[in-house]
Image (cartoon, rainbow, N blue to C red):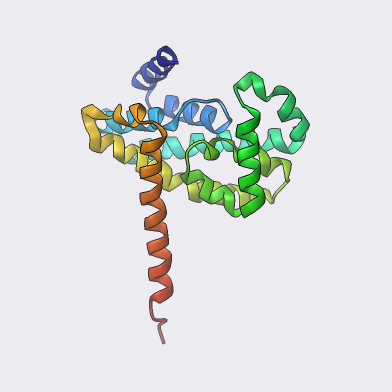
Length: 201
């Protein structure tokens, strides 16, 4: 896997934005390429001045949306039986599917948003959304709203860490949880502030 991750890094270094789009599309289509590596390295390239921060974010969000749509369509047209039968070929385990399914059943369409801020679940949540045939425009909206802060957070973390960007990969999901906790905290703070703001006369 380390060799595979190095290949991913080499492609991003060589092709830049298109490689970020493809990498994030694969990750969100349930191919296990950690976004910590894709976006963390993209942030490092921003730190070096080789990529633009805003364009890197755009590439990450576009790729994530494309991959999520692919996974949604697979769930929509293939159903749970298709996923159970063929998921193993993309390293999609039964436990991964069950985790995403329970999260979706518990929180409904809102899970599409909040799961984007959590490691593991975010990769697979589009499948049960497709199986449940949730409203597609709303699925797109929640996917975008959840993907944007996650993408910004990891790219900014990679930029902030600079030469030490691989820390995101070394501590893996723990780093993602820290980023996710910060993002969720920021979202909740914003919502609370908006609710407490006096309405204009």
